[in-house]
Structures are given as structure tokens and as C-alpha cells.
Length: 385
Image 1 (tube, rainbow, N blue to C red):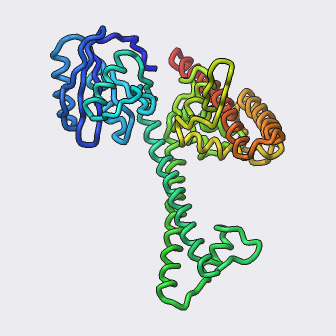
Image 2: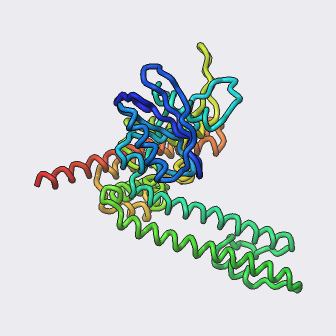
Image 3: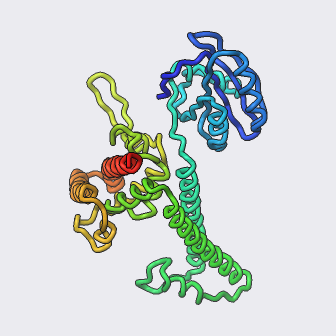
């Protein structure tokens, strides 16, 4: 929740769009809530608004909903000395039966919610985390484009009865050599094949370039961030790209006071509708970070294998502290046992993997908190020296 630890005389709600910002203010202590109109979404217009509100006397705070405009407004207001919160749009209270939605009303609702402390703030990444997150999400988008390009090529070949030789795994080098050997009598179909094939090759090259850029970004990242990325790879299923995604999406893991809070942030916790003695739990809420949830579910599939320490895992754990390795070992055995236990109870594999992913996040939190605490101690010791 947004805490009103710093009381203000005015609470400002901003409904931000690409070209405009609707502004409303709520006076302290249950005072008047009024609209101040609409301003252009430009830096000079925001500066004039800050000057106008500051001229009213007293202190004020602002908030706006997270969205496609990013954090540019947050950083501008922060640089001007204004306390600003970026709030989760799905968690803004809405009155039941309210069917009128306008920019003016949205701004007023934000101002009222900020004054009452009913809004939930999102984490605003610092420059290093935001830059890494943009790069990681670009790779994720490229992977999605690659999947669609492969589907188009595969379905084109299937429509014309072209099937790869037996025991050929799709999208391997052998499979791609077979695709390139295909010839069509019709010039139009041959051109179609070459276009689809070129797009698949283009996507592969794009992903390689982005992954290379991510490697360079990690090397240039702050030491504490690199340490967490390396430590998370001690967990089974969490290779470098998964670890980088977790760190870029979550930021400092120690900002969560418990693993349960981090699980809620991911949206991987069960929904619930209970009344009296009756408890009903349903599917996961999905009201959280979808990017984080996706990589965790992918990592959780590896827990179906026996908890042996493979050669790859042993290599990834080289140089890590005994505490991190101990947590990773506990995770490997516990998560596999949970996978087998839930499967034996008749749960579907998708349900089992989702539950395992949620528990895996608890071990991610434990490793992150340990490493961040250790890095802070090292930094303090260097500062004293």
C-alpha cells in the first residue's frame, strides 16, 4: 500500500496519456476534490504545473497509474523535488456500479485514493535495472517473433505434404538443412518458402545479437546485481537468461519482507472466495508480473527429473558460497518430491508445475536476500576501510 508516512496538504492525481495529462487535487483531511483540467504531456507543461501547485503553499504529493508512458514523468517530478508514486492500475479501487469513466474522473479517483492510502505502488526500477529489463524484454519479444515465424514455415510445408525424415527433431541443424533442400515447381511457392525461411534465419540472428548484448550488459552491471544473477543459477532450471529476467523484473529481492510477498507479486498464488467456514480456492490470480511468472514456470518443468547434480549444474555452482549451494540442494530435492507428490494426487501436470514454480520462487527469494545482505556487508566494510 502507499503509506501516508509523509502527510501533505494536497494530493494530486494524474491520469497520464501519450499526449495529455488530466490533473485533479484532493485537499487534506477530507477536503474538496476538484479537477484542474488537462495539460499537454510535455516536460515544460509539467514544470509549469509544479510551479503552480507549489505556489498554493503547503506540501503536496502526486501519483499516476503505471502504463505505456513508463516512468519519465516519475523521474521528472522526483528531480523537481516532488514525492510521486506510480500505482498498479488493476488495484485502484472502483465503486460497484460505476459506469462513467472519463479522464477527469480517473484523476479525481487517484487523488482520493492517494489521500486515503488505498493505492498500491509498483516498484520503480533504477537506471541499471530499467536498461537491463528493456533489453531482456526485447529478447523475449524476439523469441515470440521467432516462434510465429517457425509456425508459418512449418504450416506452409505441412500444407504441401512436406514432412521431415523420421527421427529428425524440428529446428535442429539437420532439420534446417532439409528445409533448405526443398524445391517447388511453382515460382510463387518457391518465393514463399524462401521468404519464410529468411524470416526464420533473421529471427535467429536477432536473438543471438540480443543475447550477446545481455551478456555485455551483465558484465557492465553493478557488482551486487551480477552476484545475484550468478547465485540464482545454482538452482535447477535457472540458467543465465532466466536469472537475468528475474533480477531485471524484480529488482532487489530483499525489498520483499517474505517469500510469500514475492509469490503474490508474481501472481502465482491461488485465488480464493471464502465465506464463513467454507473455503474455496481457484486458479492462480495472474495479477502480477507475467514476465517473472513465465520464466518460473519454464524453470519448474526441470523439477520433474530425479534430483541428481548434473555436470552442467556442478559447473554453474563453482565459486558460489556454501550457503547458496545448500539452499539450491534443498530446493532440488524438495521441489522434485513436491512434483511427484502432487502428480500422485491426481493433479494435472500444468497444475503441478505451477505449484512447483510458486515454491521455487521461495528459494529464489532466499538466495537473493542472502547474497544482497552479503554484498551490503562487503560494501559497508569497504566504506569503513
